[in-house]
Image 1 (cartoon, rainbow, N blue to C red):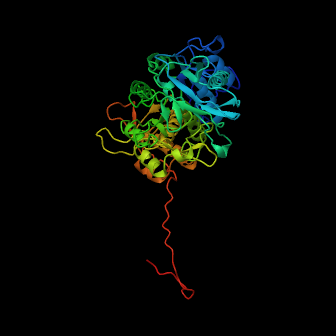
Image 2 (image 1 turned 120 degrees about the vertical axis):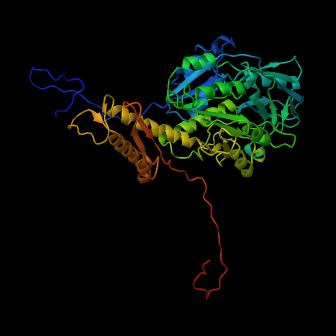
Image 3 (image 1 turned 135 degrees about the horizontal axis):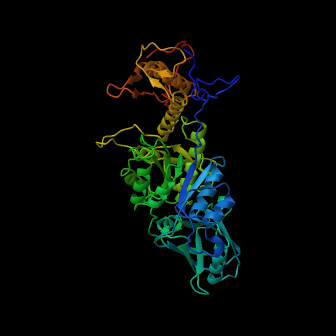
Length: 528
């Protein structure tokens, strides 16, 4: 029986040499793993140069910091997210989904309470960015306040504008540059690094903050979140593997998690098979006992249960805004999982994120509890940056409310998406137009026919490649448990039970240090 061609006709008569190219045995599953940053752009005029040119709700590929500033407005939420993402991962293809402003703007206040008696430099920090203000020995509170206003407004990347409440008075009013509740996450303080970092208040100068925290102040009063319906619809089936999503109000979470859900209409569902992971960050609201937001994060985490979502918990006095923390977390996850979807993300640093002061950070015990309640955890390294402790998802319970560890870590989804893509690539490349027969059918060589055993052999072969590449283990057990059968009702359908054993990650190294106190004459250890 001749080899079967897909295109070259059997009745062709003209000589001599004709070639039909068949790529079915050469394909490799190498999808473009795009990152998507979702955030607000400047849609209202904040000065002509700051208004973004992008069309709201429309995803757009962005390749440079300069393009980000033009598209979304320099210093906008989405522009800052892009800058932080690139600082952590400059190699990932980045798309952005700009959202329009909505709601009311968050506001705050800095009051210069007493004037300086010596000259110096006032080291302010606003949203994790340094704002130095020169202070003269004879400056009044009004002059210091005016200089604060000038210094803040001279930095276009800051998320706030500043105005002097009244000439000669020491009050500086701050307003978030965009509308919405995300503005409530803007923090500000002075002398963050303290004397050891070379920062001290000029002698005599004192500042007070509205909505004061244990380390400075924060904007308040912002309300409203963008509606995601139109943006999600326009996304269509564009592939986005790593998504930074900063909106944690429940309607926004429900909308985005439905899009990336496991139902037939979701990206993890059988019909779309697009997959994707959501990364976010949440600042804990400090409790009455000054717990730096620990209890608040625990209580919030227990209300969440999404396998495709990882929300990293941060202390209340973290200086960087949470939308920037979410972008940094997403960037590091994208870099780690693109290189190897099975390696844990622990120790990857969130560059450009400014943590809280050392005495206001979560303890290891608190981090461990957060991980058990659906909150990803971070710990500050000696380099001064938060580092991923464990990339936990918010998933904790099965459909009956019972504890379930099926999707504890984001690595599980990263491995599964890689395995499914490899398998889909192999099947669609090698068997795009095949006849289907029962095992044992006697057909000639070269026939475009497959049987369940042929498909099973292909799946086992693919699994062995995945095992060699460190994604799974126990290929022999997999082959034993793999089921490939022809459907009993539909003769044109093959059903597969695919039971991969996902490779684990070294997360715990436990040592029992069983020491001895033995004399010199003791030559052997007693066995327990």
